[in-house]
Amino acid sequence: MSNPDKALIRLIARAALLREQLETGEISSLAEFAEVQGLDPSNMNKLVPLGYLAPRFVNDVLEGRQPEHMSSRCLQRLTDLPLEWDAQRNHLGMHSSSSA
Image (cartoon, rainbow, N blue to C red; front, side):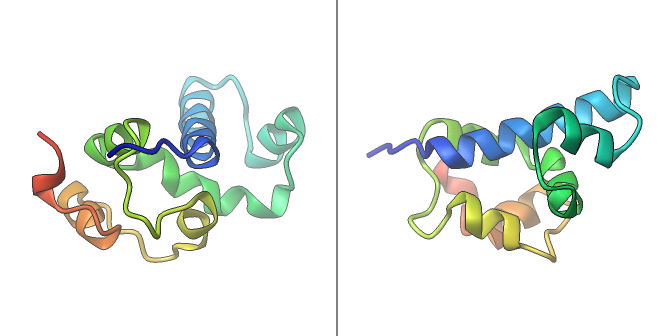
């Protein structure tokens, strides 16, 4: 059963936008992104790693197949997110068999 979490999807989308705008030079700093987006600048360092989430994890979230415990608040609080995508999915409680 799928249950898309709008707040979680918004968080992931915002992180992807931050990554894209930094990579393209559209913005020059996290502070600039925070100002443009109307966000608290102190939370920007937590947002950066979320721009590099495993594509399968992002797809699962978009389809509402995130673990019950996963929320935007939970994701923002992670401090030790692995860089390797399969390790990320396991760390986040989403095992390889949950999607193709």
